[in-house]
Amino acid sequence: MKKFRNVLAIVIAAVMTLVFAVSCTPVADPDNQATDAPATSTAVPDADESTVVIAYAGTEPIYDSDFSYFLNRAIMEIYYKAEGVYAPDATDDENLAKMREFMRSTDENGISNLQRAVDRTLEITQGFKIAYREGKALADQEGAKYTVDQAELEQALSYIDSEADYGAATYGASRDEYFYYVYGMKVNDAKRYQKQQLYAELHEKYWADENGYVIGMEEPEAPVEPTKPSDLADEASDEEKTKYAADIEEYNTLKAKYDEDLEKYNADLAKYNELKNAYFEKFREEYNENEKIYGVRTVRSLFLSKTDDDGEPLSEDAIAAKRAELEKNIELVKEGLSFAGLVKGFSEAQNATTNSGLTDICAYEGTTGDLPQEVIDRAFEINEVTDIPEIIETDDGLYLFRVEGIVNYDEQIGIVADSTTSNPDKIRSNVEYSKLASLYNEYVEGFMEKDEYKLKDIQNEAALKLVNDFIDFTMEGTGVGY
Figure 1 (spheres, one colour):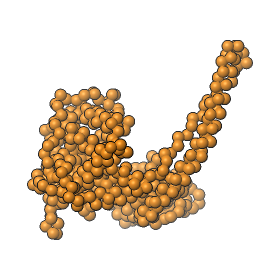
Figure 2 (cartoon, rainbow, N blue to C red):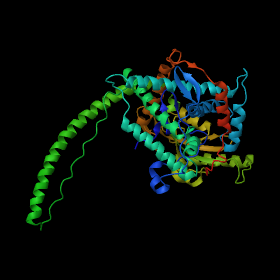
Figure 3 (cartoon, helix red, strand yellow):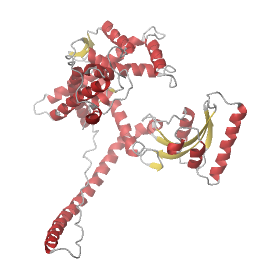
Figure 4 (cartoon, helix red, strand yellow):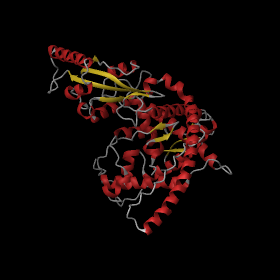
């Protein structure tokens, strides 16, 4: 089933990748609701679509629900890009307090971060409204090539209801309370957004088609080989022999058809792979310029902490002893001892026993295995699988590590911890997505200064209030049992 993917995951390439509004609390999968929660929630009816307008993109209203939905992205851009503001080791409450303080501060030019959040949110929402209006114009043309799939729309709207019921029943809130907590908009506002989103996707597809960002054919589906009937037993009856003969005749017919289909499939697959490889050459330069972002290094590491069990710093002599221990381990590996075994036996990291310290490092996927930046940087300086580990010392401890796998735009060398995310096809898809997002964003920005799409009638005070309400938002008093 296609999820309410445009809220859960991607809006459109030009605009944003959604981060859950307000909370990072995981949302349970509505597909499992039959066993996990009641099918319906409270009797509180859903509110009507909001009619409060914060601004216009040309003649298209930007409602407060649109603004609140995209606001989270704008704040995350401003907050997390501010060096030294977000503290990974701090508690959620501590970071929330820091975020509120930061957002209410001003920069050296006297511009408040609250106002920057307003401006950026309006810009993001303006881009979305442009894509929606342009997509709807395509769909409204006579004999339109690009149209909204009504079945897909109904499925998406049904999914919204499904999740709203599940979340409300699970967390003891109304459907609107739950949906606002997770997505920054209420249920009917989410449905209005979803309808517009499908038109925005039409525009994105049109742009990709017009600019040749398509492989040229769908990947062929392999034929299914028929199963040959089991051999008859020696004591089979005449009736069983007659049926067997008929089954064999049918099998031979199906097998002949399968052989023909397989020959065609192999030819189609070769053509598809040729087109696919040519297509992805369009993005090689993007990868080459940002290999450290897109590429994968698989590192196995043995960690020894510089603190004791109570979190107190070790003495210099104790740290020196640990350093000497790692140096001895290097010699043992040179002599043929299993590095994975050493990690499993002696590493103080949590992943030592689960996967013997193996970690895929990929900045794009946001995976580092909690390795420090010093190890990550060094791993990407290494362009081959290594046999002999090396030591890197950081503020928190000592790391003995080696690169055991490399995944680049074309191939995998060595091993990886997770082949579902660390493989060349995944890297190519990530590069493609990011590059197309950038290009499409530039295309949409070209519409922003046109009279029919310029921002106007901005209710700045109302927008600032939405930002303040957003960063002060709590679930106290709503009954939500988080």
